[in-house]
Amino acid sequence: MARIPIGLQLYSVRDDAIRDPVGTLKAVAAMGYAGVEFFGNNYFNYAAKDLRTLLDDLGLRCCGAHTPLSALLGDALPRTIEFAQTLDNTYLIVPSLPEERRNSLATWRATAQVFTELVAKLKPHGLRLGYHNHAIEFQPMEGALPFDVFFGNTSPEVIMQIDLGHVVHGGANPIAFLKKYPGRATTIHVTEYSEDGKALVGERWQGWSEVFAICETIGKTEWYIVEQETYPYPPLESVKRCLDNLRAMGK
Image (tube, rainbow, N blue to C red; front, side):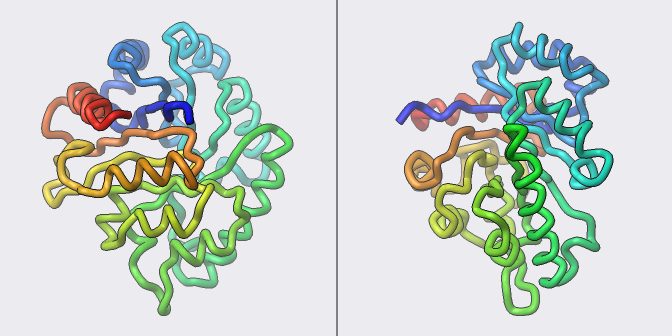
């Protein structure tokens, strides 16, 4: 299959991006990243068409946007759809949920139904919907894992944006979930886990080769997305080293 492109979650360089979005995007493009994923519904006060032009000029694609669930409900949904289409962004990923939507297995099931309904609303517009995990989804609740309750009750079209480091932090093995939910890891967060929070991608965890093998076959992954939330080096240097490590692994 064709090589899966590597994008960067801009939260990794959040302070730089907020202070100097153009300079930061230029630096990310120069490193060799193929795309960027936006965070927190934050587009640095750009209109969608202007941001699209900037990305096009730099040879970057939008590989997703972390979008709060509130921006996908009610009167907010049409505005979110219009912005995503103008930006040429296919992937709307909910990065977290408010407490009232995840405080019991019943609320996890109800939230899963909301996602399934949203998939049907977004699909005619050429948009995909997904959910990004943290560690809490792997902490047992009422005898079950919230991760399984959620993805087991959503449409198979809901993207499972598995964050590898968060899964490991939650005490689970991401390989097991990539196998359990084939075809749903459309985009994944390539993150490292270490107790001090400062390891870069590829430096500690030993399961990378198997993850890549799954993503490139049954996972049907379309983007590897680097996210580095804490840094042993300045943020831009850290994400450059992450990309270099992935290249050294043949990605």
